[in-house]
Image (cartoon, rainbow, N blue to C red; front, side, top):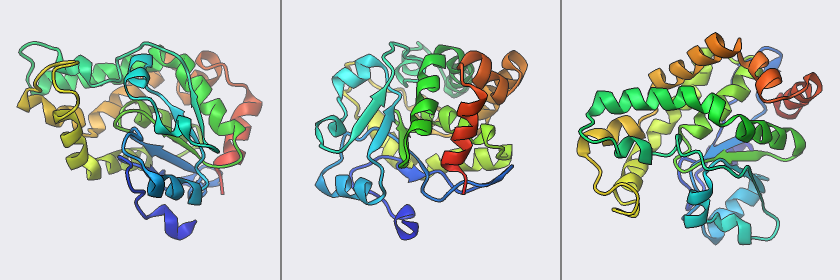
Length: 254
């Protein structure tokens, strides 16, 4: 497993293990939690790569319309489980930014920060089931959306914060998405052009595909000011019990 953690899986987008950061009560177990973009391009070799990493359960954060347009190929594969929460919230999708007439780069960045703030409320049911899926599985779970950046980034940041990771380490893991910027750029520029938002204004592409620390900072500001931090959010908003949070730590800590 140690060697596999750092190797790419063919046919995946932004698929990687969450880095084993130092935590309050130890460290994240290597290969215990994975994050990814959509699995649209995965084939036999990629499926074998997931199996080799014991990643046979994924949590799909995408909206119902996204899942209908591009169903997960894993649904048709024996031995794989795709967990999801039915919803029609599109805030985490890139479409919202692209549809703003006359928007420039800073407008797009402001919209992205607003999305990160709103997702804490809009995705409360989604994130509750996502965390419970991680807790319930003895094997590693991969959390994913379309790009593996925004909706996935918040889910992973919440988990790491609950486990006691420093904000610097959480941001560092989030910023690793930028290594996939060329693939994300190509995806957004060629994504069913015209069906959702038409041609993508060139000036909006970078703020949308970039993992910008300001976006995650906006989420954490809202988490603290509106909810009292990740533990209060998990218990009062997501409805997780103390026993469930303890189980999350047991599942992921080395």
